[in-house]
Amino acid sequence: MATDYDAPRRHAGKEGQPEPAPELKAQRNTNASNLIDEDEGALADSYELPGADLSGEELQVMVHSAQADEFTCASCFLVRHRSQIALEKNGVLYCTDCEG
Image 1: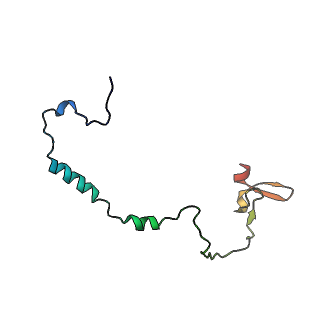
Image 2: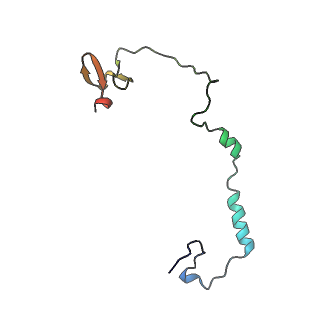
Image 3: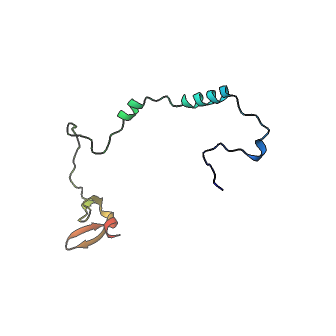
């Protein structure tokens, strides 16, 4: 037997209850549409899409030299604290994340 899943469902105990008036159905639908009052245009402008042209943007970053208690991992090239040294091969240091 084929079942139409888009048809309204009738539950076993609800045969005796009347259908809501069309005015109530319309009011129910308008109340739900009033919940969202954000301007979609302003919301869309706040997101930056991947691949956006950022050639006009200028970035200001302070660069510090490596501190005495830091090293640069030879595998991932991240500056890490010396407590994360996992392996040293031929004078080259590797972090715990890369050597696992």
